[in-house]
Image (cartoon, rainbow over all chains, first blue to last red; front, side, top):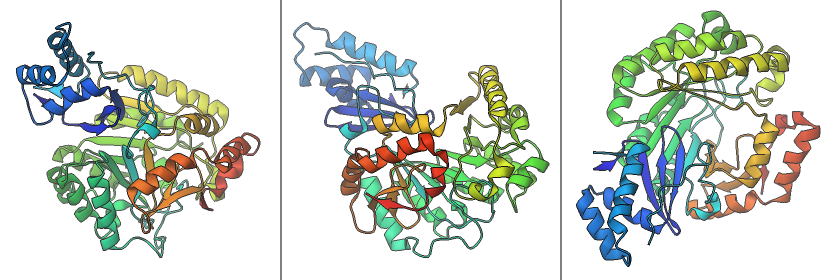
Length: 83
Length: 331
């Protein structure tokens, strides 16, 4: 799994931005979304991403896995991610 | 915790999502660099007044150019464009392209297409440019060659075909005038036939060479109405196959929007000066003397400057003030 060819990620104080340069669309990311994308950049798989995000954030309600997977699906749907 | 889905964008190119202002960003997202004012053509409408022999006397040296590029890449500016003048006549053009692409930057070239021979196109493909945007202001030799003085429609079309054959993504830009507007539908069709993935147009601006040629160029509002109606239809026709993107609003509306929502975009001139926006005369930095971080901070302050606000509002009563865009005002 990796970011799509024309998608660039940059970390920011508020989290990060994804910039799809073909459409010139910019997506703002909160800190947790940015944490997910940070793991995508070096090529982590879904399972690793879930585990790393779980290790980094408090998972009181046990919802992290579902949220991360839903977020990855959303990125795919937007064409920002490719397998 | 909540993993928030990426926020949808505000619908403007290079505009951060509505919840995020450009001032929240640590650096620009896009740097549009006019690398030279020299050009092989002398187009009637050129907003930069480019042409043969029109290079600025103080354009950046090779050392200065690569120092700026290094700053942009170190600052993680994700997207750059090289334009001009004609960027491909710049003697360090390919070295600059190689540097940016080699450091992972996404780069668009904005060209008149006259140097897009098969060898250059293969080189651009190998270097990995994101796209090449070619100006194609007509669907026929007659209109194109009238607008682009010294230009050659057939050579431009051949260049676009060479890009397509080399596998370089193609964008087309179209500047409307009273004598080429009727060809807009055919031009969109031609762009698609030539393999373009995007088609851009808007309103031609009263500045640069257009100040002298305005009587020949300026379309009527009725012409614009028909023009945009055709573009709406073409947008639907090519949906999913080629993006037809156009600025229907006038310059004043756009500038009022920008005052509230500055794009995360720096315009760099051939001499290293940085403008707030192409359509404004205000300079907010100088890469010869300042760092990217300093310029970015000045850019943010610049959009709050009363002189900028006054200039924009003056355009409401005097739209011809765009003729002053090359009389730079340092903020």
